Length: 224
Image (cartoon, rainbow, N blue to C red; front, side, top):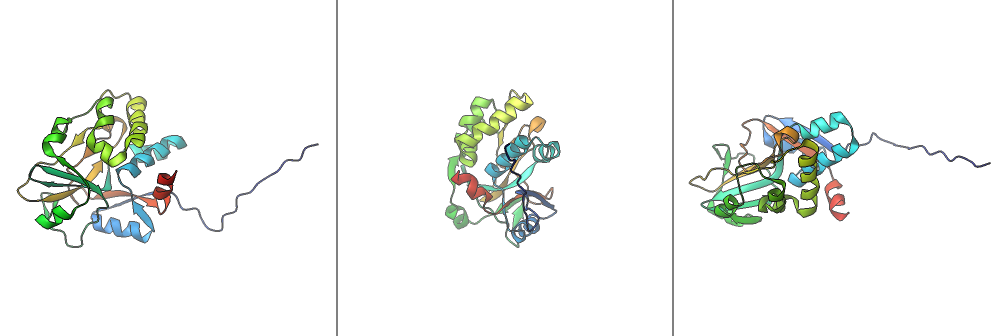
């Protein structure tokens, strides 16, 4: 007669959820709260993974939370003349100089930014400021810069197949200004909101909403 082996999970402390949504009227306060909770601000790629993980769980409240809302990200876009830079690791300064919802930069601050560099004409040629077909999304330079090929394909499959969109995931640029500026990238809600990526987010105009990811989770995902 065989014996049945039973196992029991033992947790000495409550498990920490991998993802947690943080909201507030000012981005700097939300960023501080995320850091105090020993979490990392999710970039665009982290939000895409957040949504894919929610779908994989099959838990409808999590799917609704992940896909039905827009989220600020830790990615940034910076503009000067006809040049657009896109990178990761944005942190709101304590006393930001804002103009039309954008963070005003000096020429040196713009030059020192490390990120992918594009010309505005290049991005407009890649069909900026409009919904895209899936084939356009997969080769779009901005989506490639913030997500990479593998994650982008997985996410586009979910957005287009699950929600039946023929066009979605547009990339929207900010209007040119007469000085260097920086804005946070915003990932719009998925589903019927079509997961548009806004390079024209307005700091603190609508408040701030970011996802804090358990420290180490993003690195673990990359290593896998």
